[in-house]
Image (cartoon, rainbow, N blue to C red; front, top):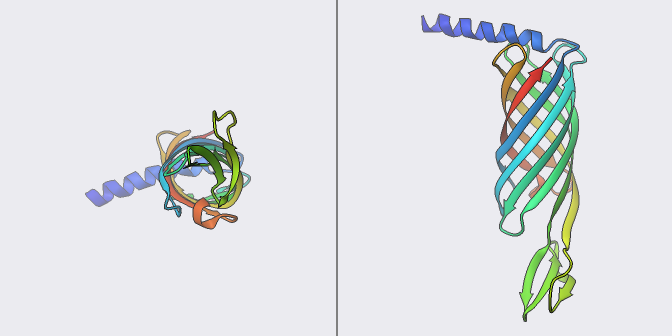
Length: 198
C-alpha cells in the first residue's frame, strides 16, 4: 500500500513537472543563499540573495541570467559582493531534478585591515601587510576599501518541488570555483528559492 501511494505521488509530481520544462516557457526565481562554506579559514557567516531569469529554448534546456548580493562576516572586516552571471540549466523531465553550469562575475568590497602601531592607525593591503596605504595620526577622514573582481565557474544541482502549475520551491546545492582566487574565493553552499514558470 505504501509503495503504491509513493508511486502515485511521484507520478503526479512528474506529470506536473513535464509541462513546466517545455520550449517557450519563461522562468523567474528569487533565492536566499546561506549555510555556505568557503576555503577561507577566516570566513564565519554568509547570507545572500539572488534573482534568476531564463527562457526554455528547447524542452528541458534553459539559458539564464543571474543577479546577486552577498554579505560575508569574517574574522577581519566583513565583505560584501555583487554578482552577475549567466549559464545554462538542464532539467530531468520526469523527476524535476536539474543541473546547471555557467560563469559568474563577482565584485567584492570590504574595508582594509586596520593595524594599530604606536597610536597610529595604518591601513594596509591584506595581501601585502608590509606596505602601508594610508597613515593618519589624528582623525581618520578617508575610508580605504579593498575592491577586487572574481570570475568563477558556477555549478549547481537542485530539485523543483511544485506547489501548483506555476510555482515551485527549489532547494539546491552550489559550488563556485573561483578562477583567480581559488583558496579564498571558491564557495560551496546551500540555497532555497521560489520559482515561477509562465
